[in-house]
Image (cartoon, rainbow, N blue to C red):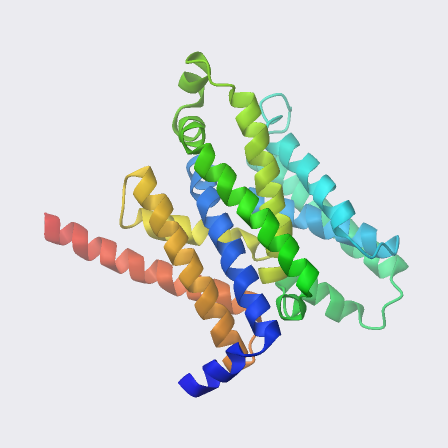
Length: 281
């Protein structure tokens, strides 16, 4: 099996998939901890469905580079949910649910009514579950993902203290002079970028797993924010790498395999956390 893995690693499409998969998993895990602690775990699910609707619009309009449509629409939706939540009459999980279901329904309706594809079910399945898109990346797409991922990681490192402040006590941060509105806007924009990138990896229905599971797994073992963030990043990268390799060897769907590995890792961390807790007592 080891020789088989080495052979596969020599193919460019596998190398591209691993690079993109690891970077997306890393970015998702870094900001996933903040989203979980701010009770916005399912915003990834809502925004991914918005991105699906935007892809449907781009497909109907026959726009080759769908990113020009998908990214702005997703960013605007993220800003409305994260920054405008306190001013909206419909708040929190209800707003996310409405946007999620509405975008998914309208997206599929547009693709069904206006699509010229002979394999509509296959196209929809690939978009929703990321069946093969991660294995068909071109070099320009890889470089775009690398550039955006490096920017996301750099922003997280540079503004770590501010992100920490608005995560745990936004009111105190505002009172101490921190421009919480600006940083919430930055957070919303970055989350939207991560969601758009992650659609190539696990599809729009499974994106929340990349955000939720690594953070929750790390929280089973650690309590400090920095320790949780670092371990979440390690778990996410390991699961993404392992999931891609396993999916290629087993000819299984990439996105579903990565999420399955994340679930197994969460279960392992739960067991270790309980054992460590009982031992300390």
